[in-house]
Image (tube, rainbow, N blue to C red):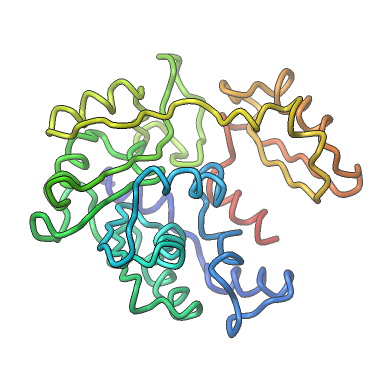
Length: 287
């Protein structure tokens, strides 16, 4: 199996639309009146979900009427939010055919089929003309790509001079080996986690000028400031061998600090590093 095929196989999930429809019923919605915000519960499955997207996009300076490229768009959650929020036109590419076909249907459900165009494609070899977009972005894509320089070269090529490229991704802080499975790989072969400094080097090597590096958690996430004030039903899905947030010193204490009533909060621990495999994550969200 090629590395590209391994990535595609990892992200393939059966009956995505059926699961989403079932989830909509549980929140009192349906395909006739579903909103972009309601879909965000399942279509923005990068770390942080919609909250992370809302933090990321303002840094890209989208303006109404611009043409934006979403590289590694998944089922189009970020693209739909950008189109709805900023009045931009978004084209998205992703390796996984089932994600693209699902995303097209979701676009129709929310009336954005003319604003969000999705197609199967490879981030390292984009099927677009030079200087055809005002901006481009990736969210949780590069950890599956062996040489991120190829992605950044393509982004630099298709974005107009003076345009913006942003990457929100998972990076590593040390050379300690990862414990698999991870959300983006069940084994080592399709995982290419790099340090943020390596991303910077790759970006600068293709001609990108770095304006913003945001490599820190937002202060309001500090558990002593925020977590006890959380009262809503909460589902936490975490890995037992998380090297960023150890179970004994971070995950379990955070769960205990939650202000949510005991009967309304659930902690599920998987034998993984960081967060559970994406398939498990989506299954639990839609359960």
